[in-house]
Length: 108
Image 1 (cartoon, rainbow, N blue to C red):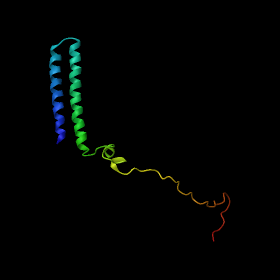
Image 2 (cartoon, one colour):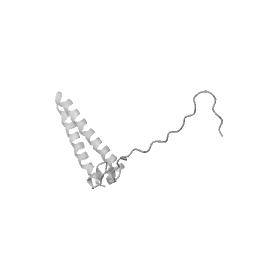
Image 3 (cartoon, one colour):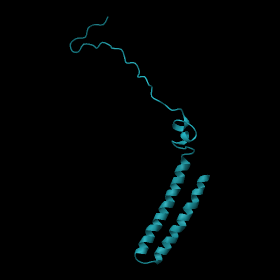
């Protein structure tokens, strides 16, 4: 619902873009080209704001990586911090290797 507030700056940018486009059409030379580019930029920013509001609304209440840190958590999204074990796991015991080449001895 609060994403509808994005319509306020979008509306202002659109009105400003049309105003600049109107004034650019009545001017001459370099000001005409500058006005066209400026109005195009205003329309582009308005479209990007709409896309950003849609993107944020599509992701729901996902607050991002720093949410847990802001709310007292020590790890990602407030979960406990995961630390690697301080002791390496024990190595596998030495197992005899089968002989290389030739015939293999029969198993009993």
